[in-house]
Length: 289
Image 1 (cartoon, rainbow, N blue to C red):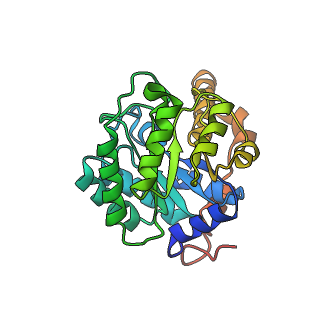
Image 2: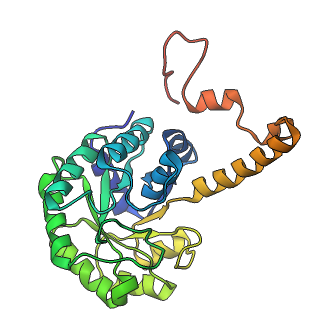
């Protein structure tokens, strides 16, 4: 269901303002994000690892798995989607294949990070970075490999934790010079740092508003005023869903019936509507409204 050239559509959204992107860990959630009125969706690497494989966000999913899962999400909605491609799944030549596979899966773009593999969650301690030169080569390889020039190559830097805000800014300039279309400064720690980064790095910027992380919870409006053009909420829906699932399962185990939860469930009719499914119709999907 994705339209052609999703990267071009996302670039237009970024040019027009700041785009909020909730994280989807499966295609049904992406449909909910679209139905809620969001213009784009983010495919979280942590979300895919946690929800699909039940493993932590430490690079345990491979390229083929991520491309397939992200492709399901991109195909389920009309809005553009970007995906977390971790460290690019290898060296510069591996990054080239990563870009081609993710682009082929229908995504609007991806971000790769400058951590050493195996990577760690951006908001935990103990992260190690590759040399700037190595990351620059990955970005150059990514740019050369894309077939659609509008496909977004976003460079994420985790340098704040080990090299400070100045180190993150320096790396951002190097990554942009290498051809990155946008920069994602991970785990900035204060509103002042977000503002400083935007003042020093004049390029499309992505802000990560993950809950329980190292930084402040800023609104889309606040970040837009600073100059950010993309704001992701990677695990918001996943965390709420997991909290609710744990509660209902504990209650089901105790009571032996989910009857008390019926008014808090998505109905069968609502699910079918979300999936564009009419059980009385001879074909699927039905025309989308």
